[in-house]
Amino acid sequence: MTTLAIIPARGGSERIPRKNLRQIRGKSLLEWTVKDALGAAGVDDVVVTSDDNEVLGIASQWVGVTPHKRPDEYATNDCGIEPVITDVLQSHPCDTVVLMNCCCPLRDETAIDRALAYHKSKQSCCTFSACDWNGLTWQYCVDKWYPNYDVYSRPRSQDWTQYVRETGSFWIFGADHIEVHGSMLCEKGHPFLTAQIDSLDIDTEADFEMAKLLLPMRRNV
Image 1 (cartoon, rainbow, N blue to C red):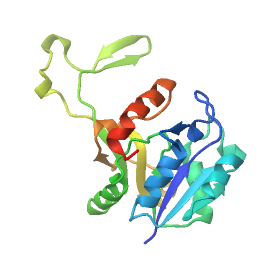
Image 2 (cartoon, rainbow, N blue to C red; image 1 turned 30 degrees about the vertical axis):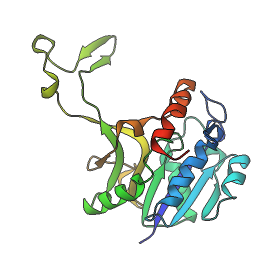
Image 3 (cartoon, one colour; image 1 turned 90 degrees about the vertical axis):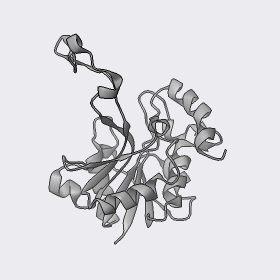
């Protein structure tokens, strides 16, 4: 049974140019993620898939990491992640996939191995990183905001419905999951709960500044 970590790292980014190569505390977002993948005992191989030659060149410098040239049609802003994964699996077959997001440098360094153990113990078809998301929420529909609770009988905090949200840090699933379900996730998925601090998914310059402050709390830097 082989486990493959796939790290997508496009060269382009709409909001932050060259985001995956931007550095935080001396390492790029790509480097922090590769470090976590290589440090996971449960991961057998690591592939970095990119359309960008600079990213691929950097990936080739690590022992244990295989750079994979992504076709241009899978490197657009409109392309979903499933074709990217399927493209990698055509030349890198495995039993289990761990998809890792470069934009989450605050993930616990032990999270991947713990999540793999959880995935196996639950006999889950798909597992995803998540954190608690409790609170009173509103939803926008058509042209109006609607509360997701009874505003005339406002619940106490201890009575709030428990929710979790995907952090976007990593997903675990069988290599045939996309072929069977058409997606890397399905309704039978299991959330693997992580700390709130792990959930930062860098998408803005403010996120970068936040990550610089928080990273020493999660790693030796």
